[in-house]
Length: 217
Image (cartoon, rainbow, N blue to C red; front, side):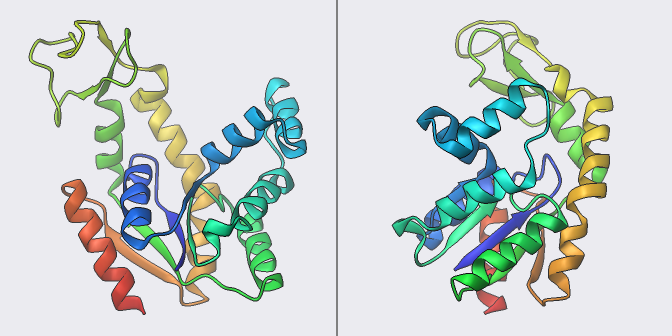
């Protein structure tokens, strides 16, 4: 099964992608992983991406697309894949269509994780990270520490990242609405979009997604 996962920041795309990929026995291909792998391995595309990033510039679509095409050509993706964070705009979606058509394959579904904007802000702005170990993450509403401002695991100070402030989150949502959300309409014209609510517990959302994907077949 070949799936594109879309949704606003804070929708839980990374978490759901990992569970869905495992349940469907297909690789989870995320933009972040693509960039890290290519840069660490010193590939030509990785070198190009790093040059743009080091200069403080956005990586051009053609570089991102090249990385995605290379990854989708790997043996483990022969029977399908789950794309997370790509395509990020309509031009990337069009390029993906061209790449897949060249290999005589097509997408099976575009899974749209729907979350109200206020809930997105609540989810992200409520996160608190441990200064000693950033893998220790708490939330002022959903996963409160035993002591306010103190990590349960190591006793480190909990703080709110600058990226998680409400103003920053709303700006990220504006970017999503302007650049990424239009791909939902693009894919809807192809009859590929399956929309589900991303509210609730992680396993509930995963079950909802699996049922929707099966029902779409």
